Length: 237
Image (cartoon, rainbow, N blue to C red; front, side, top):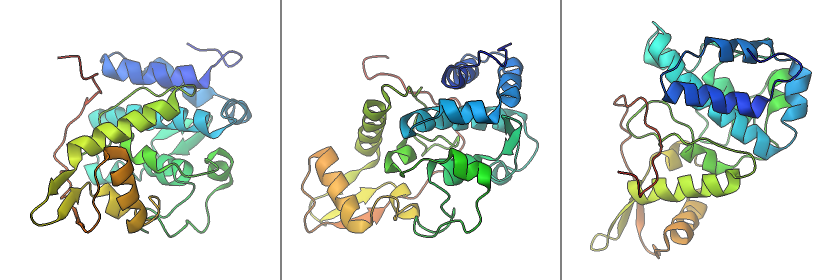
């Protein structure tokens, strides 16, 4: 087990996710996360890149753990505080909407803030919302992005790669009808993406396709379960 004096939070998040991928026991790693000192965790997550890497890895690992372990309905997995880190309990929603989205209301389309976030969430939250996290978080559904291991030193490149890969897979064009079908994540988190006009800009710049005059249509989201959906490089069969 990791001792409290030498816990590396980022490494621990990577090891937890790797254990999930390899179907290895995670109890020791979960216990180490639980016993971390909050002030030490805050010191280690001293910038947004480190916060994003740690919390995306934690979210993706714990969704898989909770989905396999929990007897609750799937819809409740997100809101129940089943994750203990640094002696504080978190839910998947706390991680996504409280920390990575900087205390935004879950159903506010990215425009409505949480009015009374806890001091712990405020101390751990990113300084700026990076809309690319929506192409990194995996909630075990078929329409979720594949799981990638995130590293603070590489996370900008990794998030860019994850976003482009996801958009290429989820975006389709009808030149006759002048429509472009896009992921429903754009609609659910409209404010995070900067509104409709910026979504158009993202699609044009990232996919290098001019959609001037096209109408945006949002794809249905498939909630069909697809656990253990890990990213594989394109050259891997």
